[in-house]
Length: 586
Ligand code: ADP
Image (cartoon, rainbow, N blue to C red):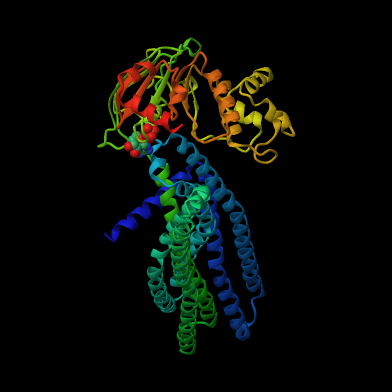
C-alpha cells in the first residue's frame, strides 16, 4: 500500500520530463550550466588550500610568488565562470518553465474540447478550472525554483565527495558522517510534513469549486434562504485548508533551523579533527581550511535537497492532476465521409437507438423516428424523461450504445464531427452570451457574414430597437457598455442560430418568464427561425407546439405516444392529460 504513491510520483516526474521534450535543448542547457557552475565552485577550495600552503611554506623557505598568483587567478577565474553559468542558467529556466506552462494550458484547453461531455458531468467545474490555472502555476513555479538548485546541489555534493576523498580521507569521513546525521534528522521532519501538501492542493481545488458554485448559484442560494448551508460548507473547507496549510508550513519552517544545525555540526567536527591532524604533523593547515569550506559547501546542498522536496511534493501532486486530465480518454474518432453540405435537405432518422449515460444503466431502450426535411418535431415529457438525451445523441455530444442516427441517409458517425455540427444549430434554454460586441455574439463562428445579412437577421429577430438604443450599435460590448435582459439574450441566441443557417435546428424552449410583449417577440422570432428547417423543439409549454408535424411523448427514456396534437388529444392518453393539466393551470 505505502509503495503506491511513490510509484505514482515517479511516473509523474517521468511524464513531466518527457512532456518537455520539445524544449530539450533548453533543459539540457540548464542541466549542463548548473553542473559546470557547481564544479567550478567545488574546485575553488583547492586553490585556497594551495595559496595557504604556499604561503605557510614560504615563511620558512621563501615565497613562490608566481605559484601564489597563479592560484589567485585560478580562484578568480573559477568564481567568475561559476557566476556566468548561474546567470545564463537563471535566464533560461523561467523561459523553459513558462513555455512548458503555456503548452500545458493550450493542450488542456484542446483536450477539454475532445473529452466526452460526461467527464464534466462527474468533475466539478472548479476542479477543472483549478487544474488549468493553479496546478500549472504551481508546477511551473516550483519547477523554475527547484530544477537548477537540485542539479547544482547534486553536482556539488558529488563533486565535494570526489575532491575531498582525493585530499584527505579522514576529514572526508568526518564531514560526511556529520552531514548525514543532519540529513537523517531533516528527512524525519519531512516525512511528517509531506502528506499535508497533497491535502493542501486538494482542499484548494475544493474551495475553488465551492466558491465557483456559490457565485454561479447566488440567486438560487438567496432565494432558497440557503445562505447558512452555503456558508457552513464554505467554512468547513476553509477551516480544513487553514489547518492543513498551517501544519505543512509549520513543518517546512522546522526544516530550515534543523538543516542549519547540521551544517554547523560538520563544521565543528572538521575543526576539531583537523586541528588534531595539523598538530600531529600529518596534514597541512591549508587542507584543513579547504575542508572548512567543504563542510559548508557539502551541507548547503543537503539542506537544498530537503527544502526542494517540500516544493516538489505539491508540484508532483499538481502534475498528477494535470496528466490525469491530459490522459482522459477522448471522444471516439471522427468519421471521414465528406458530404456536400449545400445539398443536405434535413431528413433525420433514429434507427433502433439504445443509450445509457453509464454503461449498466440503459435509459433509451429502442428509439426509432423518421423525420422528413422541414418537419417540426416536438419532444415532450416530464423532467427526466430523456428529452435532452435525444438532443445530446443527435448532436453526438454522447454516443449511442446501439442503433444508428442518420441525416439524409448518412450516419452521423460516418461524417466528421465538424460537418455534423455545421448541419445543426442549437438554441438552448440556458442562453449563452460572452463578453464581446453584439455583432461578435451573433456572428460567432460563422464566416463571411455580410452587413446586410446581419441587419436582416437583427430586424427579423426583433432586436433592432435594442441595437438602436445601444451606444455603439452592433459594436456595443455586452455587459460592459449595455445591460442585457433575459429576453434580449434569448433573441441574440436566436439571431445566432439564424445566421448559422443550418438545415436542422434544435430548440430547447425557454421557460424563463419574460413579459408578454417580449414573449410575443421571441415566439415570432422563433417561428421565423423554424421556417424551412427540420426542427426538434423541446417543449415545456404544450400550447406552443400545437402546430408541430409530430409530437413525441417520452417517459423514462422511451416513447409513450406519437402523433399530431389532434391525434394525441383524440387518444386521450398521457399527452391529453398533460395538455389538459397545463391548460387548466392557465
Ligand atoms: P429531460 O431533458 O427530459 O428532463 P434528460 O434527458 O436530461 O431528461 O434525462 C434523462 C435521464 O438521464 C434522467 O434519468 C437523468 O437523470 C439522466 N441523465 C441526464 N443527464 C445525465 C448525465 N450527464 N449523466 C448521467 N445521467 C444523466
